[in-house]
Amino acid sequence: MVVAGRRRSIAFFIALGIGLILVIVLLYIGWVLLGWHTGILRFLGSLLVLTIIVGAVLNTTFLVREIRRNEQHDAFINAVTHELKTPVASIRLYLETLQTRPVDESKRQEFYRTMVEDSDRLLGTIEQVLRTGRIGSTSRHRLHLSSIDLNSVIEESLTRTRTLHRLTPEALQYHPGPPVTVMGDLDEVRAAVSNLIDNAVKYSGSAVQVLVETQSVDDKFVSLRVRDQGPGIPKMELKQIFKRFYRVPGPLATRVKGTGLGLYIVRSVAKRHGGRAWAESEGPGHGSTFILQLPIVKLTK
Image 1 (cartoon, rainbow, N blue to C red):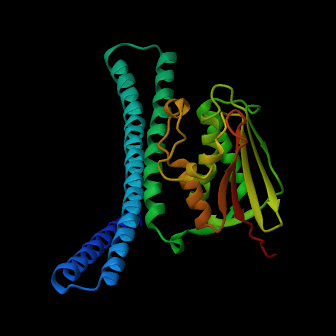
Image 2: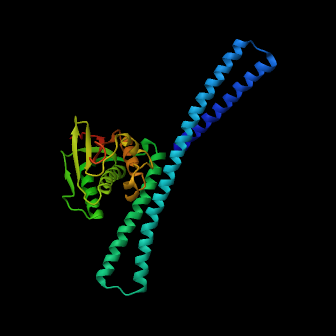
Image 3: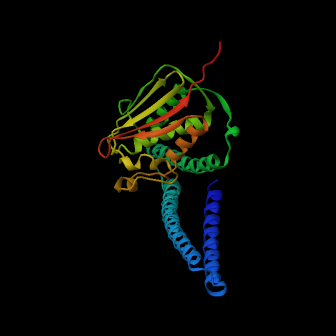
């Protein structure tokens, strides 16, 4: 889909260039060879100037978009390289230590635990990249639909996040609403929920205080709200953060590990399931709230 869109853009600007050339040739023929009347030439000249101005504006816009896209791609490649290389290097270091020197049992168990965590981190990065490719190229009818207890999925994701980041229940709280069932692809819904919770924890810094809650909206939708006390998001960035590879500029983006794909996956999953995803924030210093809204399925007895 992305490749096709870029091909259409390139084709448009090629057609625009050809159109400009044709207008210039027509104006030249009329001026030099046919000796058209001044009024016609003036009209064609005005048309040419207007076309050139429009073409220059569109071409500049296209170039700026390409520059930004390339910058995001470079940042993504650097982030993925870091996310892949760091756990591999860590695992290798621990394996070499175990291989070359005697290690007491307690230290050995600590090494094993760290290597398992690094392996999970490595697998998580790979899965993010693969999932993004699947979402971008897979149509809606390929979803493996089933009835999903959303509260169970959230509880599972919370347990995983608490273990991964060594958090207390007070740091990551859950206020569940009434039990609800959604119809969806379990793997994708689980990924969206996990990405929202992980994102809130990562951007909370050292003092994690995240609240997760669900609530019914008109008995038609269920909203999963994840609120953090992190740095907040500028108003102009609230829609941008769901784009692929995009990360909010600033010093925090360089310190927080990630590929820039998590929120893109959340929004894509929401759309594929007939829901939506968005973010709310009062601005820098006021924390953020991320909402995932999915349709409720009413089961018949």
